[in-house]
Length: 161
Image 1 (cartoon, rainbow, N blue to C red):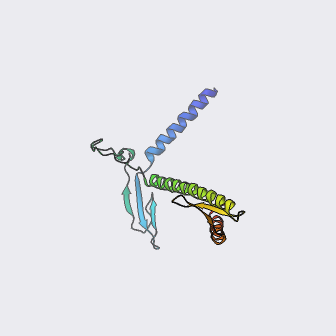
Image 2: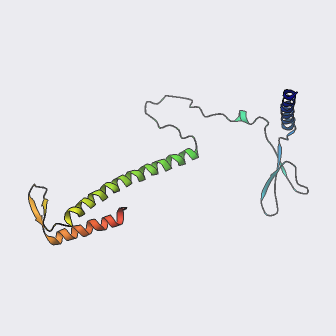
Image 3: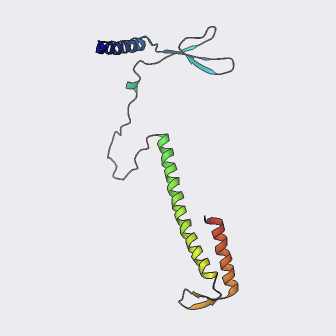
């Protein structure tokens, strides 16, 4: 008895959907009101000029996927076709995120280097610096303090604690 009710309920639902789909109009009326707003309705409004738009009953068959008519013709490597505007936006955001991550890595490395220089320059009054030609000279106090100020300013401006 219970299975009979379930089967009848399912049959009734399917029958209702089929009848509703068959009875659905494939016509839409387009009209513009006095404020210039465009309306689409299944019934034409009274006392207005409504344009009848016919919608094909099988819309899914009109849409065909794009197929390359000449696959693999070019010898050059081509980039894959972007499928949609949304995909392009996702790709752009991913590229910006990668660039931001790379910039963050470089900034972090520069901050670490600046902190090391500050740690070396701050407590010492005598700092020895190796020149490009290999000679070692002593940095005077004015140069040391100026370099220390520069490194601290860089850290304050660019580095997170």
